Amino acid sequence: MLIATEALAKHYGAITALDDCTFAVQQGEILGLLGPNGAGKTTLLRLLLGYLKPTAGRAAIDGLDCYRQSVEVHRRLTYLPGEARFSRRLTGRETLEFLAALRRESSLARALEIAERLRLDLSRRVGEMSTGMRQKLGLAAALAPDVPLLVLDEPTENLDPTVRGDVLALVREARTAGRTVLFSSHVLSEVEQTCDRVILLKEGRLVESIRVADVLRQHRIRARLTGPLQPAPPELSAGLQITQQSAQEVEIITPGELTSLLGWLAEQPLAELQIEPVGLRTVYARLHEQEPAA
Amino acid sequence: MNGVLLKRGWRDARGMLIACCALMTAFLWLRGWVSSVIEFGALVKILETFKVFSALLPVPIEQLASPLGRMAFSYEEGPVVVLTGLWAITRGTDVIAGQLGAGTMEMLLAQPLRRISVVASHTAITVAGAAAILLAAWCGTALGLASFDLPDEPSWTAFWPATLNMGALIVCVAGISTLASAVARTRTQAVALVIGFYVVQLALMVVGRLAPKVAWLEQLTILSAYEPTKLTLLTAAKGPEGWSLFVTYNAVLLGVGAACWAIAATLFCRRDVPAPL
Image (cartoon, rainbow over all chains, first blue to last red; front, side):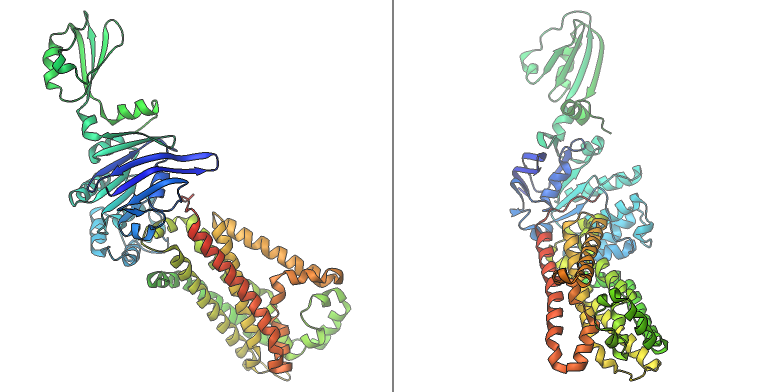
């Protein structure tokens, strides 16, 4: 495991920012971090970066304690905060040169290449850059070093849709290169497109860990019936969640492939049928009680 | 310490340092002219009528009116105090709270850097800058003496106690500012803490000097160890015999500064790094 936390907690007096958080991330995995504002996502990332001292529990990256061995941990990761801020007096190029000089694992050429791909004007001073441009600069700095772990906190915040696509492509390339990515975002569609697995946080607690592929295989079937629903054959019924919403309306959540179920559905007394993929939005809404999400 | 941070720190600080040095040289050069044209005999008579004011002076009025005293007193005047304070407080409050508030610390600490090396590199630039300001002050004094005629003109070399005492004050104030920076969340908070501390120190010194019954209050303030006029006159009059006070005063200032730096570095290495506001 590249990342492992064990009963990790952070309290500020009576306020619990994170509590009893245990999870692990394998090498080469892209893990999404989802949750509403104040759920503990940023606290979790800051604990992994060694910026905060845990109140209880332990966080380790590559077997190293994130707080006590933070310098060694930082040799193995790069980080992009939600809003990247750099010295306002430096130009974009000078910023990349400065950050590249601070770590052996970094490559200025690679950073410049990413900046060009993101269509960033490096001759401008940071103080004259828009928030989106500074975020691109942060991405170029974060994606350049050849390290096993990328920690990205809402990396597409403030970016236009075209550049968002480029960023997600860069994240997927990182995985192809065998790197692990911890990806925090509010944009569920991006998480679905990019992540292998998602952990959901609510009020400082890890409430669910799900594989994105499993969620995407699930479908919700809404049907209006003209007669009673016949029981599903035993070979199909495993994992089916059937909810009779009224005498005429039923909702069925399928665990996987839909093909085998279609024959049985065709034999039912259907007046209307609606089939849609479940997606993360449904899972997120169920856990967070209709919290608005993108 | 980290070479890349030192280079970066120098580039960030050089503008202000060059301005401080230029202004310091210019003021002390101009002060040479002021000392040469003002009739100090008349000034002494005026000051003697205000006994309260005399109590606040670092040395008796007749010593202050001497050419050496007049020039040495320039190290206690507003422009010099403001310039040294500007350098020390700006640098000291920037190192932790300044970078935390600006959000640049977050990116810096994401690199494989020890927190102590961030503070040490910043401090090294501050101390080197203090040395440059001292040199600028001494050059300004020497230029003033060379450009304008003073009766019984003192040698420019006689001002080393004042210059070094000023350097010790910069180290002390920068250390206190760094400590404020380590406990504050923003630079504004850190500056407010330092200014509050300075006001209390100044009040203790003034009350201690004006009211003989509570003269001991003066000993509670670090400002009582900043006596460039007294140290210059004493060293000139007594030679090496006058050095003990020079050593004591500077040891107090350097000791307080170094202790504050050490505490600040310890606090910073242990504190949480909050998300920028």
